[in-house]
Image (cartoon, rainbow, N blue to C red; front, side):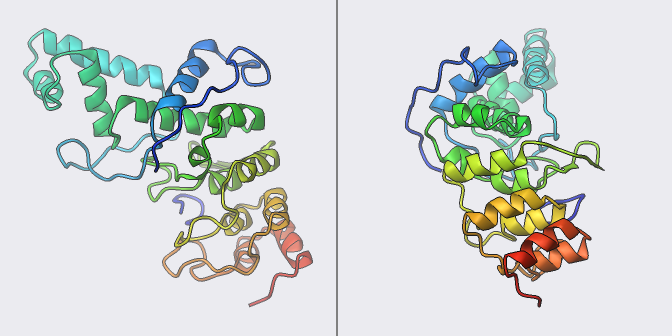
Length: 275
């Protein structure tokens, strides 16, 4: 997974998550945002990576900190313009063949970002928001018995164009891709535990460019590295030869190259081989 400026479904079963107003899920959070998150998470599939919108054009990927309210306003503005006779807005919204309605505009906007529905876009934005909270109780409430939310790669993001598993995303939290700055973060250890408990594979999916342990080593999260190792991660796994960072390198080599000495100590203590 490149460091640090670029980085490395199934139909759900409807489940009833915890009551959205009841702590720990709701504690300190805004009602409107998380009510919609829970509703969306119950009924639609996880987004998969896509590269083309409704007309086969390149997809404008989502920014690191998207605003669902702003996206809703964009859809409403398009409807208003189309109803006012704007030819470009009429052409844009007419591409989905569902009339000049808000639902049609939301569908078109979702398609422009590479999703098959507005609800799918909402779910992906909500999932990243929950991961950024670094609150394992919020994560458990959001997943609600659906392990694919803990395993499927994040999709259609500007700062993760090749996708990133939720576990790897947590492992790189020390680097803020929105501001391109390093930061101290809390909660990554408990999030790693929660994701693994929800079914996230400790070594990632077969064929991934690198394992979550390599990601943790590259970004210097020694605590997440320790969690992964205790959960059985392969400490000597190698990144793919087309990976960023250190192609073909182990977690130990990545930690050494990027000066993450705390991770080096964790890996050496766990018996990582020097290559």
